[in-house]
Image (cartoon, rainbow, N blue to C red; front, side, top):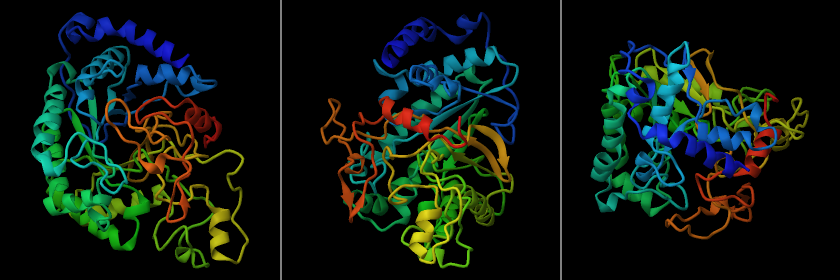
Length: 441
C-alpha cells in the first residue's frame, strides 16, 4: 500500500518538479528575507510528500504524516535523484510550492552525510569516497559544491534552508581508531578539512543556515571527550573570541535513539550512578541536559552566545508498556539504573533499527533554553540498514550491528529483524515507533 501511494504521488509531482519554479508558480521568485537568528522560529516546516505518503499508508500513520522531516543526501546520486528517490531540486521545488500556500516563511532541512570513509567507527562504512582514493577532493568537488550550487539558485532564495552537516563525524576523531578506516581518517585530517569546506561553502549562501553536528551524549558527554569535542568544533569552524563563525548552531542525536530526558535518574543522585555499567562514567544520561551544557562549553571555546542547539527527537520516545513510571528503589547501582532508565537499548552505542524505540517529542521551535528546535531529522520508518548480511545490488554492505542475532563484546545489537536496506521504508519499525511514541499520540 505504501509503495503504491508513494508511486502515485511521485507521478503526480513528476511533471511539476521538472519545470522551473517560476513557471510552476506563475511568476518570478520572490525576494529573499533577511537572515534570522533561529530559522525554526515563526516558520512553517517542509513536509516531504514522499515520506508522508509512506507514513500515511501505515495503520495510524496519518496522525504524524504531516510532520516535517529531514531530506538526506547520503550519496552523490541523491543530489540529482534516482528512479526511486527524488533529488534535491525536486524537494526544493516542492518546498517552494508549500511556501506559496503558507503565511509564514518555510524551513526545509537538508542533511549532508557523505564524508570520505563516513562513520569510520562502524564495522561497515558505506559511502562514495575514501581518503585513500582522493576522497577529500572528490567530496568537495563532486558532493559539496554541486549541493551548494543548487541551494544558491535564486529560485530558492525565499526558503530558509537548514543544512545539517555530517551527522556523527566526531566519534571518528575523538575515539581510539578501532578500524583501519579511522586510522586513515585520523592520519589524513580529512574529516576536519571536509567539514570546514562544507560549512564555509554553505554558510556563504544568504538563506542557508548551517548546523554542524555534535554527535550526542553517549560519546561527547564523557569527561575525556567533552572539552576536546568543543575545542575541535571551534577549530573546524574558525571560532575565536565569540566572533562570527559560519554556523548557526549544532545538532545532537541525529538519527540516534538517545532519550531526550531521563526523568527518573541522573548522575547527581546519591548512588554512584556514573559507575554503573550503563552510564559507564558519562556525565550525562540524556540529550537535553547534554545539549544545554555542551552549548555553554562551545561558547567558552569561542562561539558566539547566539548559537542554538537542535535535538533530533524522531526516535527518542521510548514509551509503551516497558517505560518505567518511577525511580527504582534498588540499592544495587546497576539494577537501580536499569530499572530507572527510559532508554531501553542494550548499550548507548547501539544505533541500528532499535527494538522498543518510539517517536519522540514532536518538532517544535524554542522548546527549552538554548535549544533552537526539536526536529525529526531522521525520517521515522526509514531503515538504518539491512538485518540480513547480503550485499545490495548497488554494492552496499549491511553492518553487522543491524543483524538482530549479532552481539559485540557480548552485548546484543538490539536491532529489529526483517529490516530492508538503509534508506528504504521499514513499515515494521514505523509501526513500532507509533506504538511506543512518547509523548503518546
